[in-house]
Length: 295
Ligand code: UTP
Image 1 (cartoon, rainbow, N blue to C red):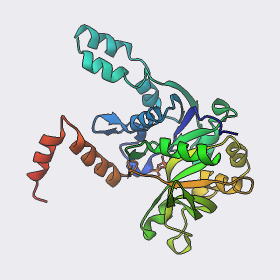
Image 2: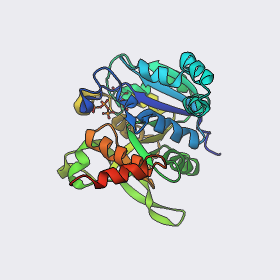
Image 3: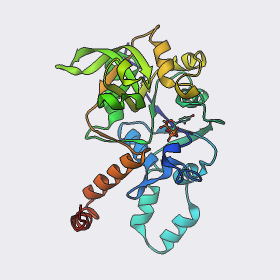
Image 4: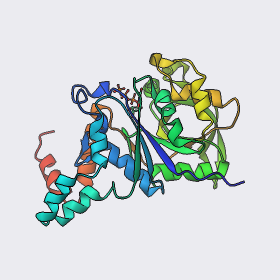
């Protein structure tokens, strides 16, 4: 039987963003601009380019800016219209015109697993993708699309993974997995044996870290409901996946592309510089400016 089609993307955006304080005290980190677009818009565009236009955003306190961003701004659009700023008008409408967006609340930041559980009613009995917007991924084929291809082939949940330096693994969920041949390649797809959230480097089963893109099946919800808080006292998605492993296979995919941790100050700066250098309108003058710096 073919895998059920993935039509919905869940964006957990209710975290506290403590790594980016004080900027995130009064605004969500998902709204920090990378060059001129909020971080979350990169993730939403990735979903659109992967064929998914039903967007569910899990928000928390102080996150209304996200809702406003994807909403129609009558005043602004009217002003741009009468000033004949057609290009800017298209730019502000571009994304919101293409998506159906719905919001749900996580009343308290109890962890990523709990945030995903908050989307249960909206997801209903369907497979879905989960996107952590602060992982910005630049890839020729959108990372979500890459995962969907694996999901469709194996009819099973798929997590995005990448190799990280051994000493950094304690910042991530980590997998213990065996490679599976797929499409002539032997080191891209893995069948997961076990998962652990934020292991000590000495205890990590591999250097394969889970990155913020998942294709999940609706049985994950029951699994989340049945786990206790884990690392950091939070309900961890990794722990729920570990439980789900008892009843079904789960795969990991070493995606093609470059990932930036835009929820972290240094990662955000790296993304800003690289994205700005690639822009047609800004790249040239920005490069010239950088050359003048005595580095
Ligand atoms: P992070 O750990 O990267 O986000 O969670 P955080 O907790 O906001 O940030 P720091 O570590 O304090 O700086 C990964 C994703 O899960 C969401 C976050 O919004 C982020 O997109 N999340 C996390 C929730 O929606 N709810 C939570 O309770 C925790």
